[in-house]
Length: 128
Image (cartoon, rainbow, N blue to C red; front, top):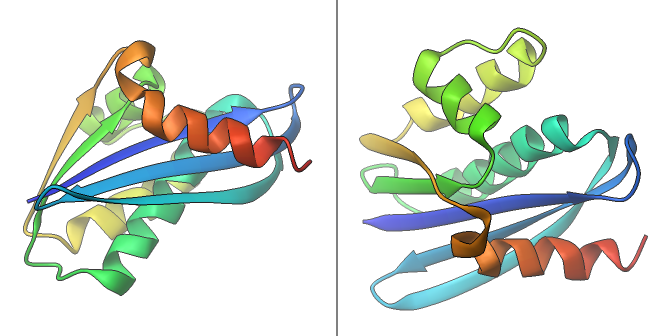
């Protein structure tokens, strides 16, 4: 099983956005961060998840079960309902990526429980 935590950070609304991802497998961690472009916070949450799931598809077996955690209620609710009024195109991209895995469990967690991904996103935002 893979555990994936993602978060986004944005300076302004919209503004420069970054993403952080923490991947845990067999008690080993992979920490990733990236620049996402200029966007608002909600879109950045979707883009961070897309970026992280793209990384998973390129670097791990899709036979894996993925436990996906994010502190964005909009993101997790959209994944659960397969619907996002204002973010339909990015939700579709994310659902396609998730469908490549045997099983993905999407779970909302409070911000305080997502410190690893949050810190990575914030540290990358300092570069912009």
